[in-house]
View 1 (tube, rainbow, N blue to C red):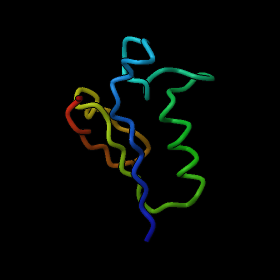
View 2 (cartoon, rainbow, N blue to C red; view 1 turned 30 degrees about the horizontal axis):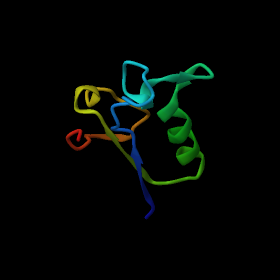
View 3 (cartoon, rainbow, N blue to C red; view 1 turned 90 degrees about the vertical axis):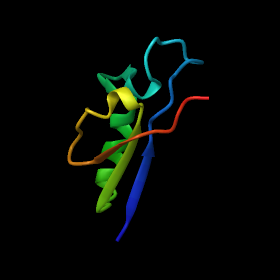
View 4 (cartoon, rainbow, N blue to C red; view 1 turned 60 degrees about the horizontal axis):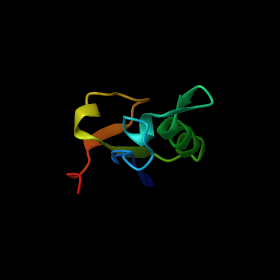
Amino acid sequence: MAVALLVAAGSGERLGAGRPKAFVTLGGKPLFQWSLEALDEAGLEDVVIAMPREMVVFSSQGAIVVPGGAPG
């Protein structure tokens, strides 16, 4: 069984976008979505996405969404 962890919990502070970097749009979709689609195409059985705590309510294509660690 293959499982992937998609680490998308960064604040994006250095990027200066005013929101978490994983949610910045590129080519019409959020950055994390590009990675999620690639992992899906790789045929992994489960994908766990670590997101900022305030975004954990987000649901994505059956992935398991968990809160990332505290910033710092």
